[in-house]
Image (cartoon, rainbow, N blue to C red; front, side):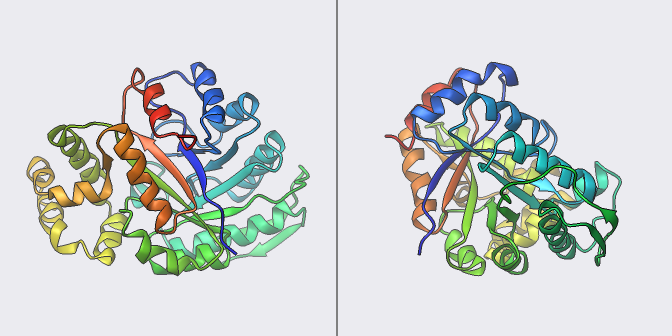
Length: 320
């Protein structure tokens, strides 16, 4: 049995006030999109935009890609998930992950310790808590004493795991209901997907630059790549994927403090691998390659201005 392909989009959209995005979200339904996937780093939190969108478009599934497991306590996370399930019954998917040392340690003054175990323990806790069980448990990475969720959850949401390398990918497919992946090429999906296993959902956040100018697209792409792939967890991921030699100068110069020089060393081929760029129509075809290689839910994150957004959403729409 294969998991059907779903067509999501990363939401909310940059440059437009959240409450002004209602008509855009309504049009997504007509265009054939099935999902909205939020993210959580330095902007909106992951849940509030989805709660708002749940009222605008009850046809869409809503998901987080992702919520860090360190930055909300066990009770707070369980209560928030249960609240989301109440706001969008049967159409919410929870994406969790370890995030990175930047967000956990630098931004939240927490210790980024045992990420694999923390994600595993969080899944175990959430399964019990969302089932209405009283949780009194000492896990490897945290302890919960005598907690019972006060909100009934009629239908447990799928729990997907943000995963990069083999261990977390296997966790996503064994204890989780699937994986959330990003910062990889369509071809890299062939390396990643087998570790998740068959009949599991694989959500891919795909970075899309609808710009038909190679110099401009690659300049934007290089800056974004440098800001992420110099984070240790992403650096290790791309070494595992086989890009260690191509990115060695980026990492060396970044450590030495030469940020401008580091960005300039990123090869064109790496940008072209990790970013979908070109005309909107060409981008649509490149997004389809991810699905062909094993992604079951695409969730493009669009790098475009608000004026360009409606036409891009239409041009890459599944209904086309």
